Each structure stands twice: as C-alpha cells, then as structure tokens.
Length: 161
Image: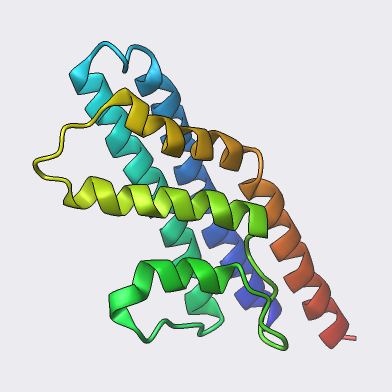
C-alpha cells in the first residue's frame, strides 16, 4: 500500500465514522419514550438497522481497499463481518476485535430480522438485545479502528525504510 492509498483509506474511514456517530445520536434520541410510543419504537428499530448498515459500509471500504471480496453472495453479510474480524497475514490486520465481532453479529442478525419481518410486531423487549449491543460497541469500535489504522501505518512505514 502506498502513502496516498493509506491517506485515502483513512479519510474514507473517518467519513464513515462520522456517519456512524450521527446514527448513534439518532438512537439516543429515539430510545427516549420508545417503550410507550409505537412510532418511536419502530424508529429506534430502524436506526439500529441503519447502524449495522453503516458498520457494513465501513467493512466494504476496508475490503475494497485490500481486495478482500466475498464470493458467496448468499452469505455475504455474515462472511463480510467474519472476514473483517480476521488478520490476513501479509494482506491486512483485522479491523474489529473478537469482542466487537460478537456484538456486531447480534446487530447483523437484528438487521436481517428487521428487514424481513413484514408482519411481525416489534416489541421493546426485542430491541433490548441489539440496543445493548450497540451501546457496548460504542465503546469499542473506535478503538478497533485506531488499532487497525496504526497497524497498517506501521507496516507502511516499515516498507518505506
């Protein structure tokens, strides 16, 4: 990887982190009163769905940069998440920790449920699991990204010497 490619990757990641932060603010706003208000509950579910989609967009940015494409389209979402939790020797460090992987996998499952539950009534109790995952991830994902970028930059610096 060249310095210009790294700088572009970092800029794209930074922009995506800002999008993720906006969604976290929406989640915080929507959870107030979600237990008593069906529209707020549905809006909270939608924002949790959006959160995973924003994380997945982050994964795509990294995968595209390192040509780490997923071949099996039927398992695309699950496989993309798993891939970004792996360190690929000689290619790239892992983007997310094992702890983040577990939380994101719960969010991924919720995203799938939310997208395909046309006739299912959403209940606040059902949202507690993905909501708690989102809260735990809020304290993890930026640390993971910083470790990833530091490892990539360290490798880049060692190659340029």
